[in-house]
Length: 602
Image 1: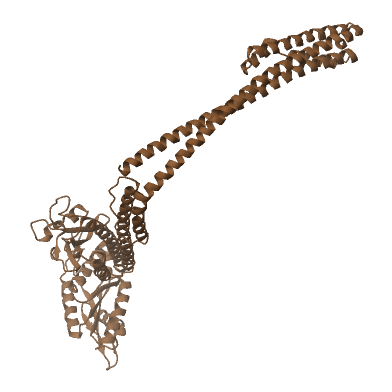
Image 2 (image 1 turned 180 degrees about the vertical axis):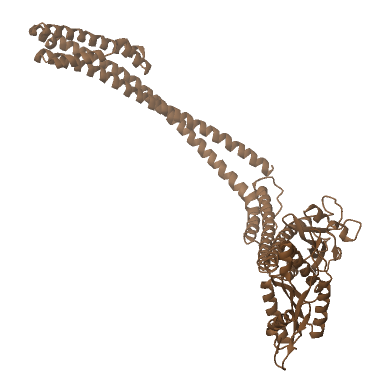
């Protein structure tokens, strides 16, 4: 016979014996409950009969007390006790509800009739006492007949209690025998069940549980040590052991998955730490070149298999220009207009391949779709740059999705840092530029002069300084108004700025005074540039409200290092030359004079 069949039969027999044993225990418990109910009923009847006797004697005592002492309090207590008594039928009904039979109730009813007869005699004695017939009242309550009636009541109550005792003792004895029989049978059933259970346990443990459990124990021990190379044995039985083997296999698979998730979590933590360090470095950048160096260093670490480029928008030419690249990207041009990229057009990440087929960008230079990612860098809804990546062809979807999130985070941080740099540069330019002419102001001139003087003194390179003052500037304000004077200043500032687009720096010091610093210019080169600027100013023709403002001229004072002494004295030397040019008739260029080999003055 098959082991599973034996086990099933044994299981069925065990269940049947267990159910029968439980039923016998319930029967024994029911018999004991009936025994307890009989005892409780007897106690209820005893209490009821004791109350009856107490009522009779209490009424007798109150009535006798009134007859003897005449104290009205006894009469009041008597009447209160009498009113509290219920009728015979009411008291009988209460005991009938409690379980008394008719024969027992008949004996009790007779006792209650005698009790009522005593009550009538008590009423008669009280009336006699109230009529001052004490003798009659005492004869009634203390006579032999009254005593015999009290004895009859006690006898009837005793008879009722005797009948109850007989019935209760019989019920208790019957319930006790029944409970003992059912208890004995229950114990026999429990013994048989236990014996069968032990036999089944021994057989099943030895044949089906012990051997596979030993094998599973070794696997569990190895898995507990996180040795997930341990493979649980296959179980052909559909039972608990098979379920355990399946559970252990699931546990092993979960452990392998947990290891994978922990590795991904550690990699994610490392990546987030890397991005955090990137953010800190970006926040410390002082220029766009610093930002480009940081991106070139960190981008390959964040996405080691994603070649890419960083583009920055050149607003002057309206073009996206490559600032740096990493890992040798194969696609995308070095420079292209913003309209050539769908990411810049739409203001969101663009992928031409993947789950959703899309249009490739024009800057890729290929007609078919390639695996690329374009992430725009925006500030206040304006595209200021772009990150371009080329996806590896051998990566799975999870790796691409996870890396894509890191690339989005990188783009967000780079865009924010680039926007901050541009905002800082804009604010610096606003602080360092003259609002009327657009030329750098005195503050930026001081900074630039200090830098150029230091470089010229350190490296011995030439440095020229040209001071410019518009001739008779007050005449324009007095004759044509301050608007005309502002127009003259803007025109002269434009000439100075255009003349030094590639070399040199022009500044407005204040009022109608300008200064030009020309690093690398010797005296002859600086003089030639000054003559060019003078000629262009003389060629200016400005009108104001339909009237020509007249000729515009300027006076120039020129000094150069090393021709005119130390570089830190160039400004004072050029200023002295300018004063001499104005005193000698204006509209001329005067070069500072050299007095000796060590110093120069105008």
